[in-house]
Amino acid sequence: MVQREAWLAAVLGVAALVNLIPFLYQVGLSLAPPERIFASPWPFAGFTLENYQYVLEKLPFGRYVWNTLVFALGVSLGHLLLSLLAAYAFVRYRFPLQETLFALFLISLMVPFVVTYLPGYLLVAQLGLLNTFPGLILPMLTAGYGVFLLRQHFRHFPREVLEAALVDGADGLTLLFRVLAPASLATLVALFLIALIGAWNQFVWPGLVANRPEMYVLTVAVQRFAGGEGGSAWGPLMAASVLATLPAFLLFLLFRRAVIKTFMEGGIRG
Amino acid sequence: MLGPYLFLAPALFFLLLFVYWPLFYNAWLSLHEWNLVSPERRFVGLANFVALLQDPGFHLLLWQSAVYVGLGILGNFALPLLLALATLALSPRLQDLFQTLFFLPTIAAASVASLVWLYLYLPAVGPLAQSLRGLGLDPPNFLGSPAWALPAVSLVANWKYLGFHYLVALAGIKALPQEVVEAARVDGAEGWPLLRRILLPLLAPTLVFLFLSAVTSALDYAFIPIDVMTQGGPFGTTSNLMYGTYLEGFRFFRAGMAAAQAILLVGIFAAFVLWQYRLLSRRDGYGAA
Image (cartoon, rainbow over all chains, first blue to last red):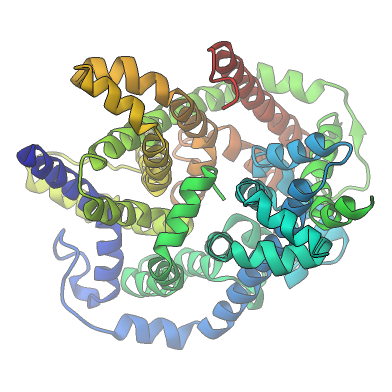
């Protein structure tokens, strides 16, 4: 039995390592001097910080980080607030069309983005919101995932506590923000982080509606750099990509237990 | 009595404006010919659909989509399931470690990760090519050859989301009623019979969900890797229904054709999901899943 476990652990360990190889190259290349990049098939060849220095001097990274932060926070906070209110409505009340309305949220999760992006883009263009934060953020505020997840979560909230609060005269927003939300803090934080990381990594939509350099988010900026002068400069390109990826990774590692648990509960991709 | 609607209104507003209105607008566009800029949208009836269904290029997109889905089933259904089963035999501490390690690629931005893979796949000088040559093999030009490009792109897509499906599989297996499993063990069931007679039927809802999500997200997962690594090439061999739809609209400015293609895409997926759902609800007791 113990031997079998050791075998399984070894096999999984190798699989996990293979799974992480691209990250080893990403970091390795970002630290490699230019002449060593193709010298060997191994990820770690020498050590220098000049690639980071180069991209930080060449690219307005502060601007990109700011754009990404505003975009990602706008989307994740908006998603959290909208889904909190909607999920609460579904759990607290019984009302006509309830099931149909919930189905609308659920089905929205299965609508591929290529179907909605073209009309969405035209709408944003018509409103004059191309290359603005509202144009970036608002169309991303379709909160199907959060509504589904929080409704699941709220349903398991002890009924007696809810009823006691109702007897005490707490209802509506008070019940939501004084009783339900504080008691569900871990899930709310996890949902916020999942939405934040998801938005941080968004590429297609920001690439479409924010295509002026001063409005680039990090993913788009790295891509445009790769398509231009960074195309063959793998060291600087990987340095830029590490900088773009790091915040999401750190957030995840800090809160990994809550995030993983919520992903497991939700079972639907964000 | 207005209460619930007030709470729902904000989320519903964005949902209707940015999902359902585009869906309807899309349906309307599919009956028109329009280049996105001209003020005139010419009504053409079902001509876009007829043209698509007769177009060999579209048939190729269908076929390549099916290949992406097939590879997605291997990479995002079979593999994560095996990994999850193996993981559950380990101590809780190791389980925790592997969950984190396998999940990491899901946290990375697909576009950025695809750039790293672009390097790994570089012909001749890339690490994969160098390693294969070191083993005495002749490395192909992974992203440049029509035979290799689709599997190479699909591998990136599957790698990126393996961790998510692995977590779903783990969660499903962990949620099995342990008493039932133990009772079966006490009765002498183990190995293959235990897996087939007890575990698999109990796992059916998880398996179906896992399978459905692997199938329905395969094209979605491949979108960014395609866009970053090949833009559908070489010779269109890495494109699929989803990427093709995007190209029609945003690259070739044929809004009507793009809309018609999008509708066919949604129709195919909806039919598939409904079919699975009916299969599932015919099995006693699992209909609610």
